[in-house]
Image 1: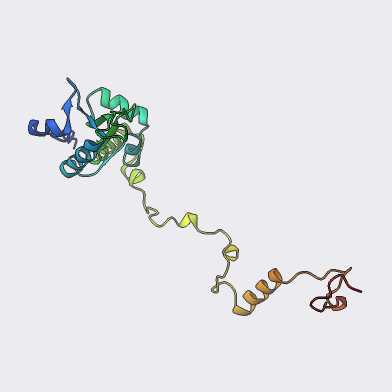
Image 2 (image 1 turned 90 degrees about the vertical axis):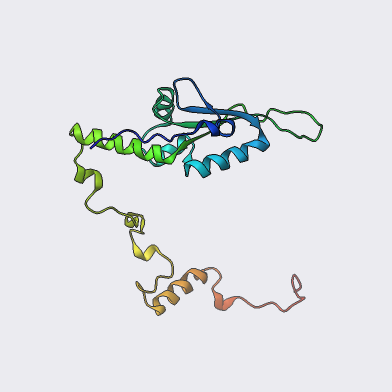
Length: 197
């Protein structure tokens, strides 16, 4: 069932925009100004489709960022890097280096293919069955996130009547009776008579 890994293919005509690959690897590097970075990203997105940072690969494939870097260094994963060297225009006319580390993007199509590769290997090794991997009934709606006690939800009329809701609101808004100053014995002061006897 295994087929060749679906690496993205970059034609040499795009090297001036996308960047040239490191020898023997699939790491394409490009240097330039901060202003050129957005054009570089637009070309990559247009040509490759979706891409994510090395940390974002974990959304598609259950691996750590260190595993992503290792696979990149082994030439088993494509990565596109943009090293920002300067800004063309600054307030004082100087070129300023803006970032120490490059922007890095990995094609989502390769992250998904890596996941398929890992799943296939796990099934072959007997670590998991195909049914266990797919799950009998995936929880797409997150039912486990619902309130455990439905009465904890405020204002749920399907669990209590309107009268019960009004009583609950009344109890929470009205002060409890104080035995020292019962409500019936407090005299209402007239406006402007505060502190006068």
